[in-house]
Image (tube, rainbow, N blue to C red; front, side, top):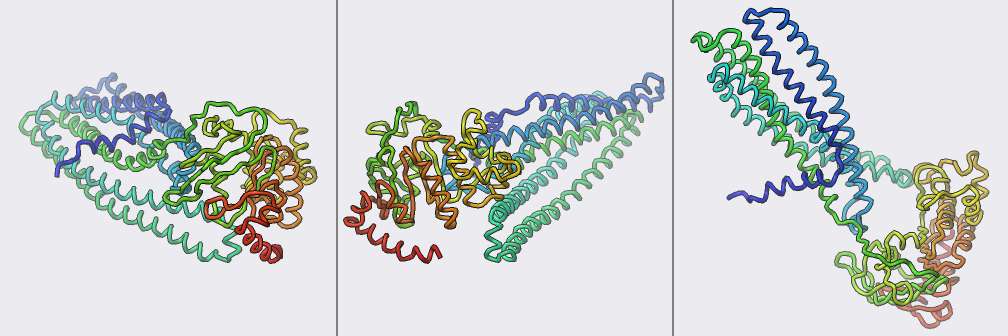
Length: 582
């Protein structure tokens, strides 16, 4: 079967795409290339100087030249190691910057489809693999080509038969290098896959240590970790065994090279085609030649090794970012939020079906319903994480939210989740997160008073500069929630989304957070998702979602009297509420 002529293009395309889309340190790579060429030029001076000495020319000039070459080689080797390490660090930095910049701008459906832990491996391991080749592979290729061509010309100048002897070795080197490259490509890919699985497991396990301890599953997770480590060990062990065989063949290649150069050179000397000094130069030059050929074939095979990393990274880089075609400014003043015959599906499952309702400006609307009814999907559509399959969401009567600037629209919204997670750092940093401009301590503390977290902050030795720990681990759930509320107060959005904001709190924390929320909701258009009927019935309007449709809408009295699904849900929740509190 003939090979598809476009296949090679497709193999190269991810690599070329990454080089185009990443701002690489080309100056650093150029310096590595130049220094490596200088090193190769120096390496080619040594056999010639040695030949002169063997020919009896031991003049001070030749001796000085030989010493200078050796000293320069040592000096240039040190420089080459330094600039290569510098170029690799800069290249890795650029690749990782591009990956992080891209991943933060991917649309939410991408994260629904792919595990976020796999992105960690792509941003760490794959970038290292690719940057290693870009910084210490590509810049070395011109040097290898220069060494190969120059050595061939020099040997041909001595005697064309020397080139023939060297040509005998090239097919052998090619065969061994191709075999070695294929083995490395196959096993490196398998090893990278095992590393990605181990990274994914560790990221998940370490993020859920409290849950593991509560369920006393340390032994179970330990066994899972050992399985992942064992699989990685087996892959590396098999790789070492396979490469061991290749190393034997590579050593035999060296033995064959010595036999050909020694025996062939001795034959040419005996036939008076060359003299002894040229034979010695031939042996030294042949080492450079074989090294250059091996390097070139090795780089070619390394390309296959990095293709896997390049394709995985290019897969992310080629993804479409969040579309923001909105150009309209957000209208001044509060506006109603209108769902107009909105339908939405995840993959093949229709979640919302022709949903229509109005959340009045400056009022609180409660969304209630069983799990899976579509409540959180309403929030996802409002935040423009997803786009409706049909229908539209408008601000006021005629401004479709998709026509508004995405950044401006999201700044227009404040979101409080059921478990607010803080970023590692200080209380001050979390209070100012996402807010443009510099905030004064007075502004922060005033917001903290309204969020009922002021007394706690003042009781801390470092006040606003208190460290909250990873994901806010040094604070209680209620404290994290109230700091998040203070942050939203400082953001001062027009629209407020509350997603089970008190569901994970104890009675005291719930009372404190509800006090903070009362201050936060004043004058804002608020939509609240809740399973707490008493909280829902404090809202100005209740919307009952049932299997993705609006089953009822109105005040608490109207819903109690006219909405049967609400009556059933209220009865269930009222029955289970005491047990939940207990």
